[in-house]
Length: 62
Image (cartoon, rainbow, N blue to C red; front, side):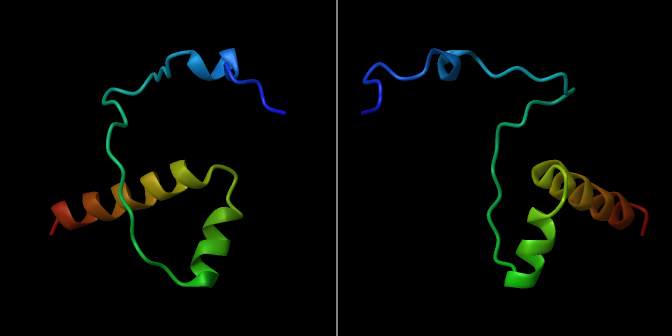
């Protein structure tokens, strides 16, 4: 039976060393193959952030 008071580790505030905090989420549809390839990465969330940022930077240069 789970502890009704929860895990104390979950109560600690999340901290980051980023210049800008990660305060928003994005949701999008992808193929199953794409999803599996992303999930296979070492750090899937960071992989997606870097990929999106690279594309945004390329589009700024146009």
